[in-house]
Length: 168
Image (cartoon, rainbow, N blue to C red; front, side):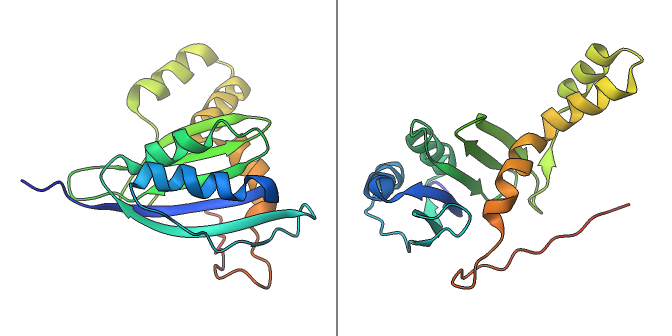
């Protein structure tokens, strides 16, 4: 039986120019084929570059990409692996200040917080609503989202337009 293909997107939000080739090598090792990322200027930090790359590979390749890239201290990135029939997807975020965050995602890309993580948050919080809020923000990766948001905003040269919405 042939393993089903997986795919997703790598967003390198900021990378020093000196790391760009190393990023490509790491992604290539994770995927098993050479890649050339479309680097453009990152306007948030002058002198840094950004790239967006749609990848295809074996299931679990998203985790492999994140593992190859997480050791670079000055790198900000996100990796997504799309959900497939019967298999949830994944999202990895990395910043120099926070390190790496992983979340399971559903078919529409939303973060899935497992029941046991919610129960843990409730136990830690006791009756303190502020503490429960803090624990749930941690479970959802809010600190990573907050730190990466300025880097996500597409520049004029970026091929991706980010759509933002709030519920409630």
